[in-house]
Length: 239
Image 1: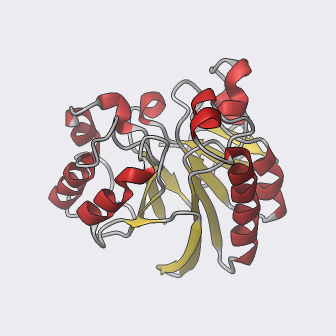
Image 2: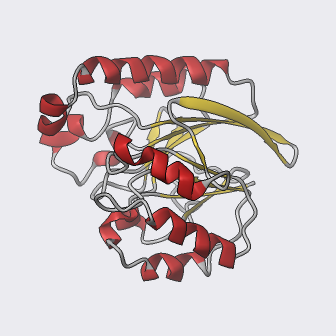
C-alpha cells in the first residue's frame, strides 16, 4: 500500500507551481494525507487549487487532512464548503477504512504543544488544558482502533526527535514529547506530522517511524510504502 503525504504549502504563498511540479510526477497513492498549513494567512481558496491539481492527475484515492495553525477556526466552514466530500478532515477524530486487504485506521489531530506560543497563551483561553485534552483524546482514539495499520496524523510534531535542526529552545512550542509514550503504548504503526520547517524528515520513537512531511524540508510528496517500512537508521525507503 502506498500512502502519500505533504503539509505546509504555506511557504509557497499563492504560487502553487512548485506543488504542481511534484504532484504531476508522483505515483498514484492508495491514500493521500494532508498535514495542515496548506495555505498562508487566510487563503482557504488554495484548497480549491489543490483539488484541481489532484483532479488533473485523476487521483481517485481517499484524501484525509488535519487543520494546521494557519487554518484558523474562522476559516473552517469555508474550507469545508470548498472541499465538500473530496477531502475528509479529521478534527480530533478517527476513521477506519479497508484498502486492498488491509484495515487502516487514522487518528487526525492538530496535535499538541508542551508549551503554547506567546500568541496562543494571550489569545486562546484555556489553551494548556486544550492541549492536554488533545493528548488524552489521541491516546483513546488510537487505543480503540482495531486495524492492521494504525496511523497518527497531526500538524504539530508528536515527538522532539524530528525537530533536530530547529532551535532547541523552541522545541516545546513545535510539538509534544508527551505523545511519544502514547505512540508506543498504543502500538501505532507510524506517525505523520508537519509544522516543523527546519527539522529532519524521519526519526524513530522506539522503532516507530515518525515522518515530518513539511514541504520546506522534503520539496516533494512523501511516499510511504507500508510493505517496506523504514527501520531505525534506514532512510532509503522514504522516497
